[in-house]
Image (cartoon, rainbow, N blue to C red; front, side, top):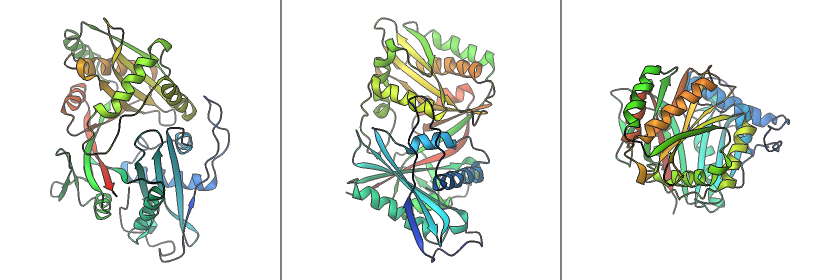
Length: 381
């Protein structure tokens, strides 16, 4: 959700005719290959707008979906419906908004996003796009709206007035105009996540020392892992862990229900990665006496952004915490990732500010703060 910076003195005024239209998304290709169909002109405009925004905010595309990823995402799936809209002012592209609608769980919620081209900001277009997106969500019976945005750490000034998260941990600067925009629109800051960056390669002696200390507490567990596709003999227990991930991690006051994961949903996620051009590496902890997976962590890499790896889920089942499993599986996956993707120079991760245990693990591995992410919610009923 972004409405930063005053407008550049170009383009027709926002008082010109405003048109907001759904963006056409081409059909997917095969189960494991991206579609050969080129994106529509409107989709390409939206993607270029997103790329320009990420470059302006971060100076790189480490956090930006590639075109292939974006196409696959906006096609949606049986678990979530997704709608993208392009706004034109006086016939010129001026901004976009989107609505995502969970279909299996959390069916009272909707994800909302707004982005305005710099030439049209501070003219009311952001609020018009937000009203439009919220209207589409309300039409579908959604009563809880979610949104998020990131703030680079260097933009957080020491003298900034801050908006505290309702979780009690973390805050965002009010001088960040996206923060001010969300607050003025009736959204409440539920949670703040810290984004962190780890420079690669990680010194081998650091990993070895941490592993030696942690292993002494994990004698009842074995570390395993895989690339891209979960082994058939583990997929059901892996699905159970992914279901727990949706509720076991801190979610503050966000109205989020447990997701129903099974083997079919795991395989659909793997096919989505493949169609998106995304490669994944998973490390997991196996409980020796039961043969069940009790912890896992996921890293992904995109050939279109070869210098960057993104950390996705990390979870240790509650009853198996206290054995340093989170640290052990992260070490194993960092080794796997460095060997498989030698062009990568950094790993990006996000952690809830109140998740001090996982933040401590990341700090021990060498992660440094990079920014803040606000998780916002607006309740309509």
